[in-house]
Image (cartoon, rainbow, N blue to C red):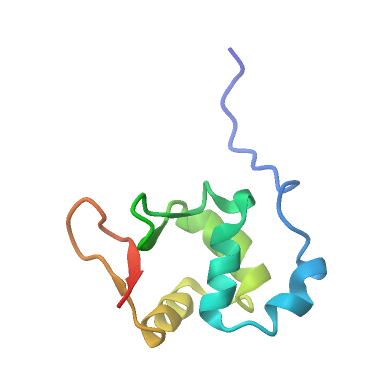
Length: 103
């Protein structure tokens, strides 16, 4: 069996320079929707099965890969403040703990 590696291929990521003009004109929720709709990020951020919310599956990769390219290099705390500003709520308990949905 091949040894497990922590190597992460970034070759599947969309080129930020190609989408930058599009992303910069979008609102925060529109940008978030574009990111979540990209198959390149399904192992980092994903819709919940019912489609009414989302969960960040890999916070470290979200912070190092997605935030710098699509959210002005914001820190994770800034990103969550933006979520709150746009009426997103974090699930505090239960099977969807840590997921976000919009009121």
